[in-house]
Image (cartoon, rainbow, N blue to C red; front, side, top):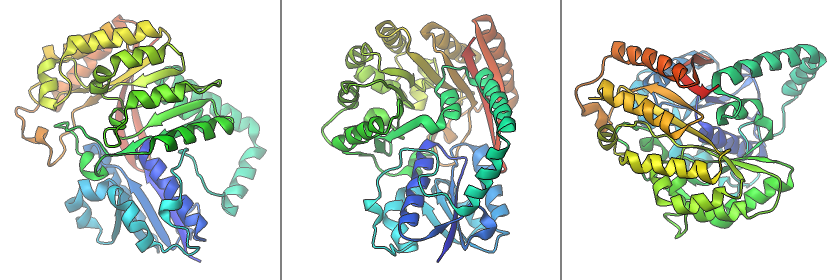
Length: 425
């Protein structure tokens, strides 16, 4: 039988869920999954290209994987985001994010007649399929040195706690991964951010059926999970295509009895403004414990250029209302610094918004100009040296306001990604 090695190259949670659903489909159709690329007949790489540095690193990883004597298939978002750069180094088969449903069975016929549409969505970023014999062997050897393992875990968790803060979604994601149950509620995005290239790769917006989302949630509870993450490319748009709503879904989930908490990632401020009254009521149930709202900027002028919600004062008032409804709610955010034409005053407005809204943690990203986006045409661009100066200013600002700011170079199998993280001490 065909042996397949499948790997996620720096992709987001949604791409991990794609990978695990693909792996589950292959396993149930008698394809053999191996944990080493040198043992494979076919290698599948699920890629990311959201930022320039990530796309560049991903292309280098693809070059390295071409040394194996196996058919290489490039999946994920890179094929649609960087088709020209990819074609310079690779002329093989692709399995782009938005074409998985239509193409997977052509590339890998359903030997056991189990179709891809019959495979449920993954609820884990870990492997959803049976472990290979080689994986079991490695695991056995690793567990024999449990003391060393425990020391490594303590050191890792200490580092992650200092980087992200112990209440952050990112910290819990990395330290409690096996205990997290993911519910992807939709695919695609209805936004039109001028800096974003990902929408080009993920396809049109589609909500998961309402009852299916609730059933997945109850299934997770029944399996003993207590920590849930609601995720998607644009979670706040849920229901727009099926005559339902994001707030209705959250209300239904949090009405379910049980000992659990829900974390939500990537909620647009537009969603916050559309459902602020509903969210206040839902948060009072104390079931939703953390929400990531990527505000991207605190400058109304810059937000308009980004095609984001731009009434900063209303946005600030809404965040404070959420905290009043549930004081223990962890609010997280993301900020892009150095967006074209951004002044130093614009940048300071972003920092002040973080302070005034009492965000627990977040990320500062240097603007990454992606080809084909509207932002590519906006001038003038902010020099990298100026963005570096602003990062230094942010470090002093956050320290003064009771935050800790850290720089972290994310690296995995050749992937490179700069992360500037802040969190309350």
